Length: 119
Image (cartoon, rainbow, N blue to C red; front, side, top):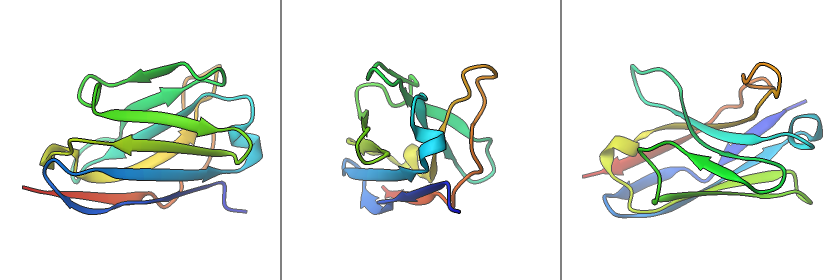
């Protein structure tokens, strides 16, 4: 069973926008904080944004004010609206639930979706 499936990536020019979607299995999505991560080539995976079950959000400093995370609890889906993209945002983007005890990812990582920002 696929636990996480990310879609919506692509190539855009600097200043452009993309909207990513992540469909999650119920055991990961329901009752848990969800998060978007990204991993650039040669770098470690980093946390980009989180959204709790009550809709509270947090963002890394690098994306604050440009990215917006939302969730649709009826569809077990989390979104990432990305605006004012720049080449430093180029990365594979992944979603996952957050384990409330360890703070680590809940599920097996999905394939991710690639975002490429062209200068």
